[in-house]
Length: 454
Image (cartoon, rainbow, N blue to C red; front, side, top):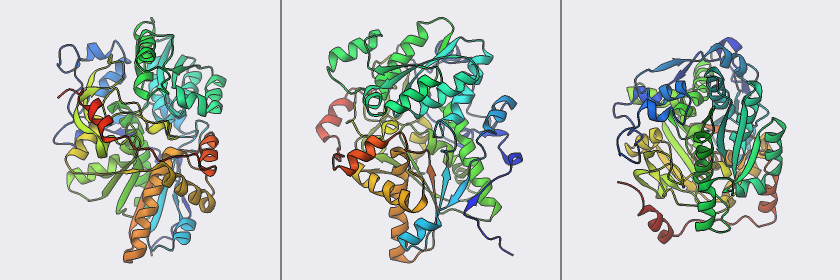
């Protein structure tokens, strides 16, 4: 007898993953290695250890171990908010009048308000284990900075956050949550670093970018004894930690014999999407199953859909390694859109390689359409979604409406990465008609892409 599917599928504490899934181990053609910008040779563990924690470097370079143990200390922290629920969007389905079945994995059930805590606690743990004083980082919308400040507070580590200036100004409450947990928060680009001053000189009045903030955070980490730099997306180690999202999702679906037809996630640097799709893509790579996997990015920062697959700097100041990725150019500074977490100029090397092989799709959506979807979702499902998450909602709704036209009974799963309760300025701008849809002109992209390495 088939089990009745509840509104929310909760896993038992015993079903919390004990291992992270390393997606690269399942790929025949691996992502291209990070390159030293000086020698153009692959970065060594010794070189990376000057910037990152030792054990995180080992995870970053490991492309053969399928599953990596989650330390007990990290699992104990996870238990405060995990396993996270997989929710059947019955009310949204009814409102759309679609035969499609829609599920979302909700990652907003923690104080940071997003999935970012999954990796923040892991990176803080390894920093503490190494005996460091503290860490530096960047943050866009503030979810990563919030999560890291919480994790550092838990392990009694100092936390220095460079927050993209436009988000620092648009999201003061998220900034104050970071400060409540003891973090030092600086708007980027700033006058406190050499690279920040250089960027301000070249781009006076700039609203900043994640690439700028990364450069500043790395400079401070390298120049401060007992500190290392940690990153909330893009790196392979982050996708590894975020695989708990996908592993829980698959366990919940398997429990009720549900096979998704498509999996949808918002994509900025790739942490949420990479984590959500990890076990499903692993099956796809092994030929065990097939899924449509869709990455959704903002039209204002369309690295997949309008970028170039090439080696490029990971940061605007050009102090970080070169990564082969879909990129808009390290000097690209996107318009001041309200999805601050999706404003990175490139995409993680792992997802870039999978996209290049044709194993996943990508779509760019405009800001006003994103907020229309967010509002519709909030009204029927009772959760106010973050602007970033709402990109996935937009495409999930679009796909469900296609099913309505064709009569196809498809199963859609998307990642609801977090809540939007600190994003009310963005919702206000949308309601007041002050939320323009901005897409970078072709000439602008051509100019910044010319600087990319080949």
